[in-house]
Image (cartoon, rainbow, N blue to C red; front, side, top):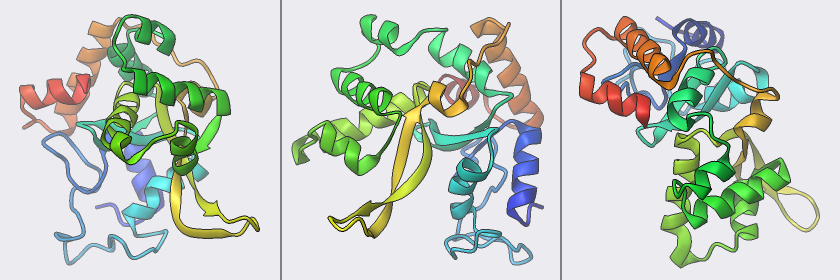
Length: 227
């Protein structure tokens, strides 16, 4: 049983990927329980703010302290982790070697996705509140914006890379932290590639899922891999 941030990272590196949020969703999660179903004998406690035992804190700690684990809304439109070793395989399956401009030219991305991606690409890193401002997102655009942001993460074009507070005119931080995004290429600081074809990468991920969860159903596995 995982009882600390260090143990969580060690286990995640062994497994290669995991659902976040304390719900395995029929696949696998290193921490398979949420705040409402924590085992009594576990040191893990959700939403306490303790960086050693609160999985909610770990999602940002991995981005700040590690260089081999990515986190974002990558599985079922929900949060998850993918390690450096397995990321190229998911890239092969999800993007088929395409850069975003190719993806967009083929009609696989919306105009909203294109606007968001271009702003993130041009800025290197940008906080969510600034992204909305630069993209001129109005209240009527909120749903389209949210869907586009998830789609870009799901297809592995952008990813979360940290968080930051908003600042007032005096440069002082205030309010809740805002998620920071960057392109996948900027996050890894290197080109990620695999010798496996998309079909071979899909099979490798499939086999790893069954090692982690022999009871996983084929329909759910396919959806997990393909997003």
